[in-house]
Picture 1 (cartoon, rainbow, N blue to C red):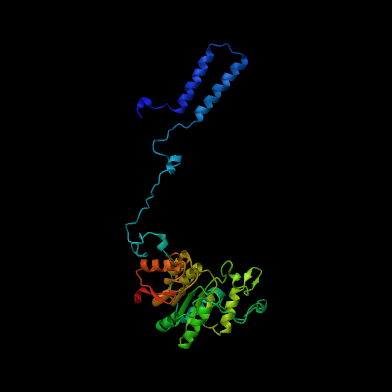
Picture 2: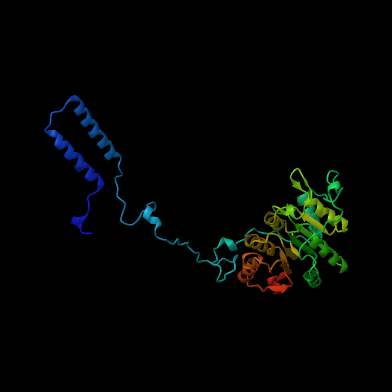
Length: 337
């Protein structure tokens, strides 16, 4: 627009308008009421002019002006020039992405023969939770044996236990203990002294009692933990199976801090991508050199929206190879790949 065609600012137009009104009234005779009216009019204009913004926005949109939201804009996140040695460098990763960073420092691994006592000391004040089990109030509410799982007796368990000869197995996601009890039986049959650490909050999931109505509830406390313990006791596996009754995220962090590592780690907790991604990354940090991490549900209807997507991304980021055994995915520790 040419300079002579530009419109004057709004407050200049208002000032001009008021001046015209004042001039038009100048030749008239005023009553007392008219004088008061004019004074009030001038006063209101003066106050409005003083309170008006003293600056004009530039032609480009301000950060909060309506037109600023009509055009997309990019936010440039500065990238570090330093190589981040704690994060794998791949095409999927800019070396500064928190989705790939699980930075809790693990303690030195405790000897396998001390794993059980470490759990008892850290979680149960040094005593076994199986002592005097079941409690009197829960005993009549438990079934003698209620073992249920999914893919809990697949060939992958025997294949890996035979190959790895694990002294410590970590299981992330336990439910009623079907796979943990099966692994305890396999290890016992091979003459192994294997300690199995089960990590689960034993709360199930919203609505799981629609399918497992026989799992009782007392004052809002579903007795999933007690039924799991009852199953372990019934199968005479209480010396082989100990548990950490917390969520997978907080539990894996604590196992890391306590130095509880596994030669074989089974991951079968949350099945959405974010849960599986977090569990796999945290669990892999607890895998001993030469160990194996594996899990169920690689082939499901969720496909690349669930476990499979998390496993594939983890393997790609860390340059690891995925092996398939039935419905299970298997990844060896990088030192043994």
